Image 1 (cartoon, rainbow, N blue to C red):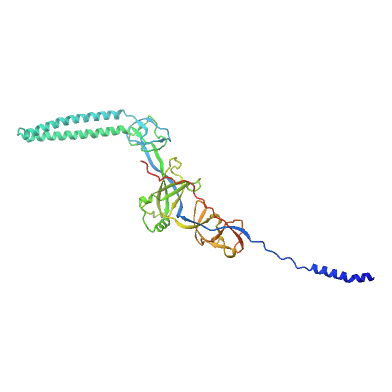
Image 2 (image 1 turned 180 degrees about the vertical axis):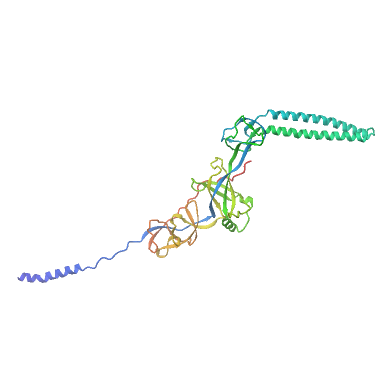
Length: 396
């Protein structure tokens, strides 16, 4: 029993030590380290203000080919839908009668000229006799009247010959300009031009080509403000670039220039008609296409701050950006936006400073009010790689 009693104090000490160890303080929550996010300062760039509108392509010229003289159609000298050059023959009308009319008019002209020669000789003779007091004044006056009448007959015969030659020319229908000729509306062998001018086909000029669109009164006033109420003349107007894109095209690959602005506003719609001119050598654009039109709203570019359009968020209060402010805390910055550029950057009109660090991450790591570790990157800037087109010019 004595050995057990001797061990009793040691067992009590071990038991106390075990109890103290069981009362150790609990673990506390350790917050995760701040998230790393990519940030970048806004891109500073001169941007010309523009508006994206909708418009339609319109043929530069459209002409109905008609038979201006009566006769049977003897030839069709083109394939429906083919491209023809200016002065190419398209249709032929029977010429027999019109060639005979030309010969008849030529004969009448020759007879009138012969009569004029005789009348002038008689007038000269009577004029000489009158000066010698051999002929009477009445005889001289008759010779003068015959000469004048012979001159009038020559002029009349020349006019009849011109008419006959013109009608003969009308028997050949030619292309008035380079263009595409539509399907024929009259078959070879049919009588044309019997009572009125008979429409044979239509020719359409596609190079260059017009694009027409309407601008609102608000846009016009904004342009005037940008131009400081300075009126643009026709020469300066032709230097204003306009770009268009078809519905299945990205961006605005077709480049042209303003060509016409209506001098009056349509009071019923509150819009004004504007027209642009585009080169179309490959005839990619055809009349009636629906196009997107990029129109500048001023002649000069203004400095602007740009950010990727994808980082702009919106809630019930409006649009905003996440920025990293003091002590690397994420801040919700309210903004107003401007136009969207083809390279995916959006103009920030108000609310953003040139040195603000804009959060570029879209993975939810940046939360307003939370600290982050900013990783500075450069916002990529891409430009439209399409080469500028030469100034469209009206055909000769």
